[in-house]
Image (cartoon, rainbow, N blue to C red; front, side, top):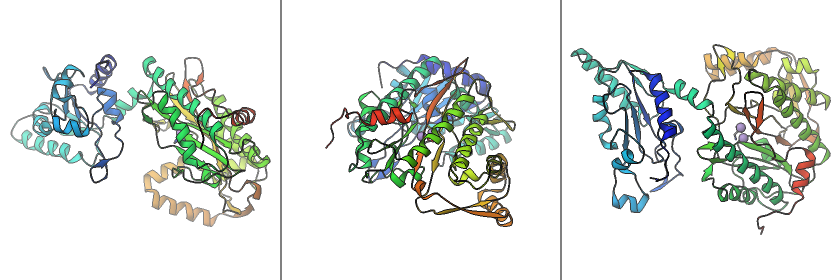
Length: 486
Ligand code: GLY
Ligand code: MN
Ligand code: MN
């Protein structure tokens, strides 16, 4: 519980959510503790939808939003006060605090949830609840089953479960000025941490030592936790997209790819920078780095309000492909390599994602089949990369055109296993070219990622100032670290 809790933004969000659900009733569970071993838990972080509506950070809580109830329109179910448990595990607001500090119309111990829900859903046509929460689904399904019995006896009860996701996703997708201030701070802190990591890294250090310096800057600037586990990937580890072991000792001549962002005020930054551990790019490293940078800037250049989200990926993959053709990596010309997606041998991921309370944030990318236009207040990443597996000496290029959106759609329709089998069949039928991967590039992995806000007139790079040109990166790498090294 915090005396500085400002209820106003949460009241406003609940109001907008309540308008959207009308005479339905919403059941929004918070996150549960997850056991690591015996009685030790993983770090707890409240669920974003629940926090967005309540501002309540404790585990094991559920919000009920019931706009047509006479008195209890916003109810919190929480862990009750318990002196012994609070001595062991931390303070609790309890039912009184949930009302007095967090503004609930009523609050009850979490153990009363099922019984009270039975009464709350009477007369409501729909329950808004996001199915897919293994610990909780059966309770909501039981409510619907009881509703069926009740209807048989003439008592109106809900027959439908509606997903509140589309409503909440749209509310979360655009930043308010207050949300933007927190998001901006997450980006600034992360920017400063990446710069210190560049100063701090050096041959002979372990990846986790650089991680410690980076995360020290997060914490000391007021970020209580990361937005996601830091990826500190040196040398060949940079080719593993979600590498998080972070335990390799770095060599002279390695590149170091760091993908890390802090959380501040429940908003996450998401920055990737790649730099030479010894402070100077080799010629092949520089060639790949500058190519990824050109791609990132090309994508940034098409981002503006009204532009389609997909135009960003289109610009990024075209620039990457042009560069890979010019470097002799791909066997065909630019248009063929794009139509046949040959660049996917080295660039398998998308060019970005929404960014907000969660690093891969909520919100649809396509609406009724069409790529979504960017709108002021949206925040997303631009993060092209190239990854040359150290073990691969040649690549096989199939001479077959296809569309990426159709590939994804088919995977959704048929399931990944069946769709991939079809893809393999189509590849097997297509003519192919074996082409060597230039030895100088093998083992190089580069990604460059910034966080972009759409404004009324253009875009703003929230992570601007994180060293990015070759000159800036090498200059900052050459500076003395501000934190002590062993
Ligand atoms: N840090 C995860 C990502 O960039 O998508
Ligand atoms: Mn990202
Ligand atoms: Mn990232």
